[in-house]
Image (cartoon, rainbow, N blue to C red; front, side, top):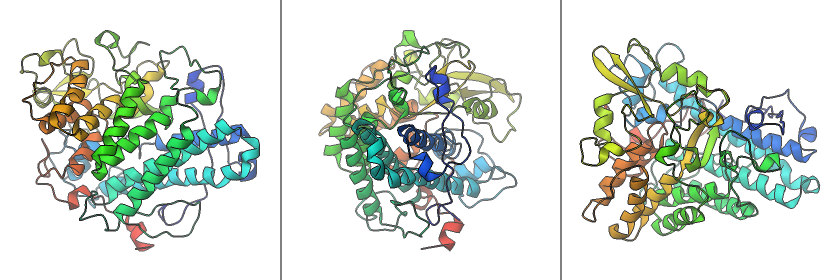
Length: 494
């Protein structure tokens, strides 16, 4: 029974928090079930419940794997283990969403788990919102605004991603087609699906409300090193790991571009850029020693919103092998060196200095010779130092995306090109001449920038891309861009 049709009773995640270190804050563990009246009897109870919401989004079925380097990047043709429909990656790469294979690696199960996990997190958000207005007496105004703003923003954020996965792309022809349920109450009552346009409108409305609420705290307390946070209030530490004020604006930029509203997409992207709360990493700051405290291979200063995954090492060591001895492990996610180098255009003059390319002096890839072919694995998520907090962050929205949105949404290519060139120069590439084809260059940048982060799939869907580079499921159709709702969901409703 799926979470949009009937919520299970939620065991809220009580959080054992210590002011002593950021690691203790980030490595919170669930306690036993707490009664609702007790959970929301203190300020800390609300904070614990909010942290529980973020922990739900960090699971393997959401941004901890499937909606970052897992399912979505397989769909985008990123990896090479897709030659056979006998393994689950091969079926997923061919958009065989109802394929079943023995064991846990099952496409149908993976697609269903994403749906269930997202609605479970939405249920957690609704549980908080169900109580917060009734307990204003125990929350100061700032805490109330921040908790409610983050919670209602996360509810919209999750619904927006569900829409982008399980419904047709937004356009005039699809606007009135049925999409997904929008769960606004903590309830066991079934909810009908709304149209694509109706879900978009609700997401927009709630994100705008979150923007207003979160305006009380525009500061960003980043993970700037591993010495801890500068905030004296634990709740205000590490704002990059919350759907903070700027992350809400960035999500609105995403939403408006998806909607085709380039005016507002540009407006919100520029607000994030001009806010100057985030900055591009420099070549000198990149450290290729994953065992070092200085290692920061996801470029955390650029994270507008990232998810902390305490057990990321478990996943990474399983699928991004540093020393594989064969290519028969169906869990591995790898590419060939030749395809990665072609993606980064390494033979082009001046492109060999790109911070993101493979090479002896570049930290983001590891090589392995398998059956006489040179394969490569991303090292973005290698976690070799247990004290390095930055090695457990998965970027969900990064600064470069705001520049790409601004470039695409600008009134003319001439106005858009400087935004794209800003990212290119920050990555060590030469600026493009005005004769460059902006749209083609934006696509190239999405492919280079978001390897292992899931964003390329959303780009392909929004642009209705017919031929996915290196894909084995081409030509693409509308049906291939839409995840099927779980069978249990269909059984219990429309």
